Amino acid sequence: MANTRGRIVRKQSLFKKLKSYPFDLLLALNEQRELIDWDSYSKTIALPSGFILTTVYFLVRLWQDNQVDEKKPQYFDFDKKLLQDSIYFRNSSQSTIGPKIISTLQFIIISINLFNTIYFLSSTKQYAIFNKSTPPNTSSARKVSRDIKVKTLWDTVLFWKKDDEPEVDSYWELNIWNPSKFSTYLFVSFPPFNLLYLYLTQSAFKNLIFVFSTSVILYFVIIKGFLVLIEDKQILYQETFDEYQRKYVNPKLSVARREVAIDATNGPYDQNSIEYYSPGRTEKLFKTHDYKGRESVEAFHQGEFTPVKKGTPLRKSIFTPKGNNRYSSYHPSPLSRKSHPFN
Image (cartoon, rainbow, N blue to C red; front, side):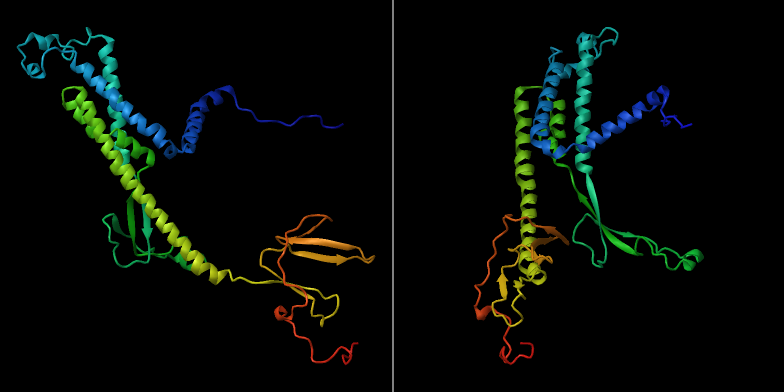
């Protein structure tokens, strides 16, 4: 009797699916975040977002300052009845939801600014420099020392086992400042000192013009000046390397040669049996015949022979005309054909 039992598929219970759903969702969101190229959205999202956040914070401060009719120095006089009636010193049970929303919005804007500032200033990338005795001429370099690995008896027995890393007493480490382009654009349009200036001063539209002028100056100094300078230097370094590769490395490694086709149909003394072609301009074709005399053409490409159908257009080659002895690398024998022993 044949076994009709189907394949058993292990399924998860509903409880396990619900239990693992938050972790799976967090993993999927993290993968989607890692796939986003934030630097490509620097001009379209980061730069205008900074100006929008600055404007919103200015409106928040303007709303807070206009809630009290008197000037700020009177707040320090505790005998004034105005201090008791102010929304900043009023009982929380009597306050409306409006000030809470404004305070929450202010906290969110300040948190975004602090997070971006810390991330912008602390983004670094480390590089290790080995086989260098003199210290690099930069303040970001530091010497890292480590003890040589002590060999145990077991390491002596396993003498054929190689270490993954070479034993180095010390090396130089470069801690390079490497902020992202997105964070740089957001810092330029939303700097922390603009928020500090709006927080400490009385709200006025001239202050908004001042903070925007500061962001414009930072844009021309950092974006149009410093970042463009770095990109120009990278272009010069790349062009220097390409020129060195093209003028020095390639002539040494890729020597230009001439392709030669030899026809042995008419014997070794046929002066018209050699054809010269420009290198890389010809198809590598091989013509053979079967026992019935039928011709078969095969092309050689990447280590394989591929049959070529009749009428297939091939690349034209440049070759010297037949009968031109100046380009022939074969010199006929001084013996004539009649005196040759095989004739």
